[in-house]
Length: 84
Image 1: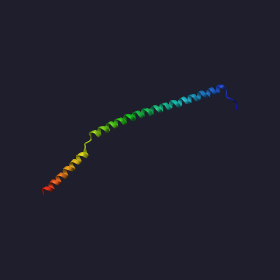
Image 2: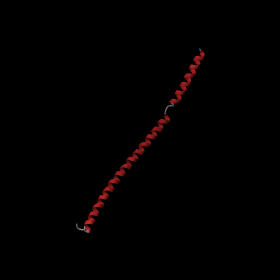
Image 3: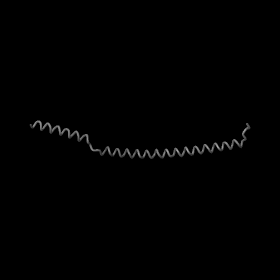
Image 4: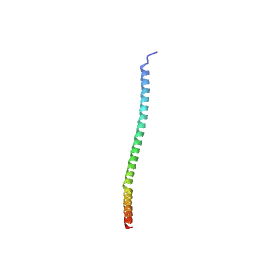
C-alpha cells in the first residue's frame, strides 16, 4: 500500500466537501418544506378554532329549552290533576 500524495488527499477532501454540501442542501430543503407545512397547519388550526368558537357561541340553548318545556309540562299535568 502506498502513501497517498497530497494531491490525492486534497481531491478526496474536495469530494467529501461536495458530498457534505449536497447533503446539507437537501436537508435544508426538507426542513424548509416542513416549516412551510407546519405554518399551513397552524393557519388551518386557527381557522378551525375560530369556526368552532363561532358555532359554540351561536348554538341554540337546547338544554335550557328542554328543561323549561319539562317544567311547563309538569305544571300543566299538576294543574289538570288538581282541576279534576
